[in-house]
Image 1: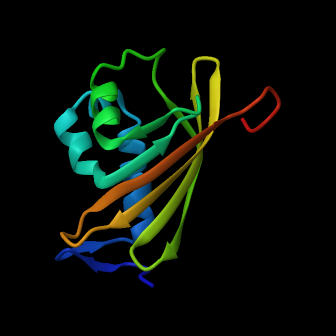
Image 2: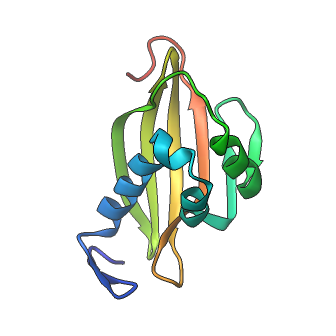
Image 3: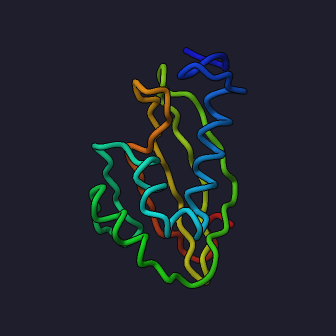
Length: 132
């Protein structure tokens, strides 16, 4: 298990810090609307179960995000992460966008090229009184 050190020939403050920074970046409109950047962040085998219950594959989510208009910025609350296996980090957080709130989990994997990539994401809608 890594708690820092070298990944892909670069020094890292720690895998959790790296992943949480990428998770925050992925919630920005500038990144979400940039298909080339999203392509770099998502693993080839990426899969999502959205808060709506819909499932998405990599191509579908890249296309959807590029066209996203949204209802304002995505607020990230209670972002936390932990190493669950060597080269695998689980990030959890609560998203708030307009009136919609969801509990989110993302599984990130350190790929052979030394880059962290999102493998799986799931959102679960929160009812009034749950979470934030």
